[in-house]
Image (cartoon, rainbow, N blue to C red; front, side):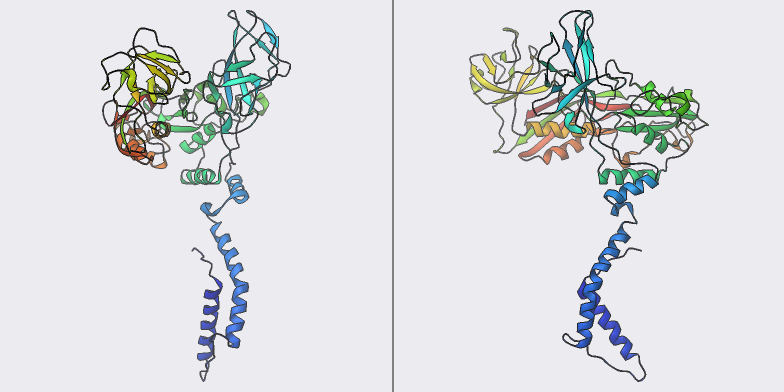
Length: 515
């Protein structure tokens, strides 16, 4: 039963009422003055002020009986008693291609590190062992891809690709700077009280143990780089109902504005962190970072009734979604111009300039563009998530346009150039957040072959991470952006994109056009 602490005035009034009731119950009945200023009132008032903090502390203690009332150390102690612990922050690892001074050569690092303009420092490491790298060995093309680890734990090290890093002391024959090509393993923040509370509640709703879905999910969540796991009990390697089997769909951290694989967890180049390695982790052969465990110290998590051959761990397949957002904004967020342009074939467009084809715009020519206008240009989904990059006009004359900053890649001839508004980036982020919050679907199998729907996804969609991307959900998120007055959304030309049990919807092209 919940306990609600009372304020001093309530305690005082209750004491006086009880005292008077006791006097009136005497034989013969007596009465006592309890008005303000009487001895009884003064005594009860003084006592109530002493009892108020006691009741407050008692209320706090009562609240802490439940998970939702626990924070900090107390929550950590509950997690320990529950057989788990708060997830600590992890360090981001990035892939950095470099070019050496000669083919098939090895150059000593001598403790050199790389840093980004904000001051974050990255140490070159061996991707398999995590040990600091002592030298760089390039191939027959004088190329090598370094794995560098941020010295600061948390999400700060998840730099957008490409990001320029500067050597503290460049190895002999190497350029002073290098650009990242991908996030090899996303850094994560320490688990917050709210996140830990949510996880503990999930554990209690479906208590891990003996290889049930909650147990498998919890073990795989502890593996480096894994952000979410969906378990299909009784699903064999071929996707067919089978007792004694399970299939786990493993997702990585959200990609955000990055072109990294994101939730489509994949092993970084040159690293053994594959789904096969996660399976070995369940067998107790490697630790959560993929390092070998001596045979005498191995303690597997796999329950006895499940044969190793009946474990299937997969990265989700991608169901592509082309999203078109048509948005109307207020007078405070007007589009940069009216109409659209098409990038011409000649002269060939570059990352800082492009030419326009006449006759396909509401305006008569490129003169409708002026300096500081913002434009959205398709530079491919390889160069920019969603395909479109933001460009700012430096100069525009005739059919020639020069941008103030270089694009991630040159636009393709025939690409449409759209006007944008100040709400453009916020719209992108809203769509990215919705897509990154998706999970895999639930198989559709008849009750005859799947008694009790034991192939159902764990955790269910009611716990979060829906399987379907709906236009209505994107509209609700975009309408909350300042300046947006109306919006329509289509996904693959319809209203939704549905994923299968081993698939997750992946954003292909995101096109934002004025209404």
